[in-house]
Image (cartoon, rainbow, N blue to C red; front, top):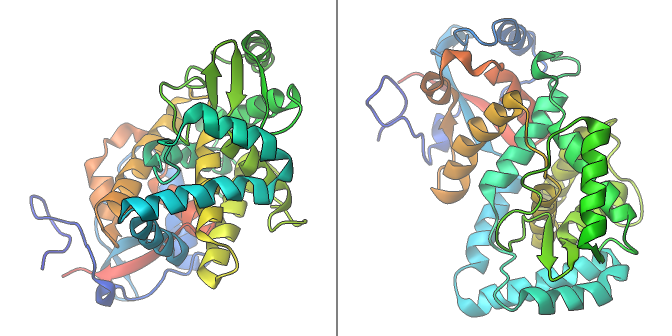
Length: 352
């Protein structure tokens, strides 16, 4: 058995629940003091780079996926086990679009014909999702109690506004519009926000994470993007959407609600799946350097190991030690935001 400590040892904690002492109280004075020091020291040598003392014990900080995320991963793997299982899961995903938003029915049928039977809703683009969530975290970090103003991160909200502009120009959330009209909307949006062209809007290929699809002279929004918008507005169906003041806060709150409801059995696998796709599909704008670091570094490290490598526990010190000192963001704050929104669990593990 190998657990964290100095390189070159393998510091992947793997499946070792017995090593978790307890979940961290995010509101404790100890955590708040650690968070404040990390924010103050952002861009320097991280205060969580080495093991630290907690209640007289030397510990490392452990990151685990929330129970909802763990259950989702198990279900995702189950649906991928055979071709019949994959086919059934994809059919259920198409049905979810219409069950949440009945006005999608005609367009979904047309869209399904357009993309073909090989369109795979089970293929989650963890890299794009990570960048979207990381971008949202970058914006939340600007507000209390974090108050990190470096970089003026706004990519998530700009993306959300762009997709809303496109939705406003078509008859319903699952509809289509002319390529000329779409490009006009994109140009006007860029001028209004003084932003660069949304280079990733027309991402290559056709996947559940792609914001829009070009087809001849028309542009179609990925229906998952519209579904995501509906979840934020009225999940669980009929009212009570997320109450956050900004697009990233509403997205993170909605994702937390869906994952918790999935854990409790009041939301299904397809609620989680389609909302994750919707978050990716609504993220079209990527320019901010701070957000790139947050979205690409810790998110890629975390999601790749949790979702692709079967890892259940990760050591925060392992991640921090691998990063250059000039990352320019408070690492502990990133994972504190994720934990406070129910996406991960922060815990501690005694140093072996």
